[in-house]
Image 1: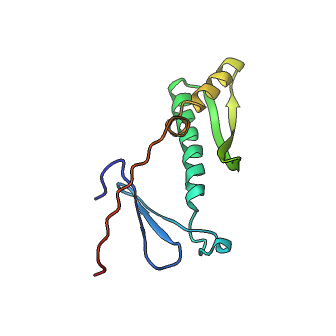
Image 2: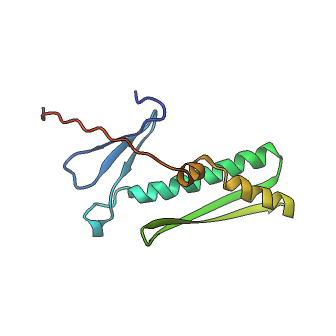
Image 3: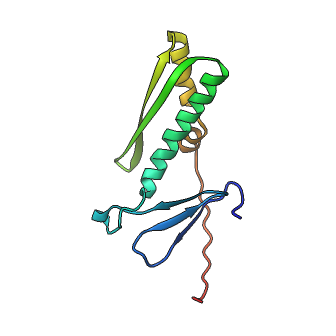
Length: 136
């Protein structure tokens, strides 16, 4: 079993097709055909955009439910681009429901407080350890 807050990516010799595992879920990543992959799953950058989009949507839904806001649907679209060595995420949020101006402003504040947003906008440190094993 994979420990909580851990992700494992395993890739063999099958182009870029990668198996991703978390505590109880298995997904697949790949690269587009134009990049030498087989396009059998989202790319790593797709997963990053999906992470921000889903965290924003879930955080907004949690808040709307807790406050009993009249919200039928929340859609979050995230586009990213590289500009002069900097990654810029463009996030568009569409909320279907009946919100007054105060509720609307509060939902924007809540969107900016989702945990993935906080992670991406604060300093990040990556520590890497490398081990090698002989093939079996």
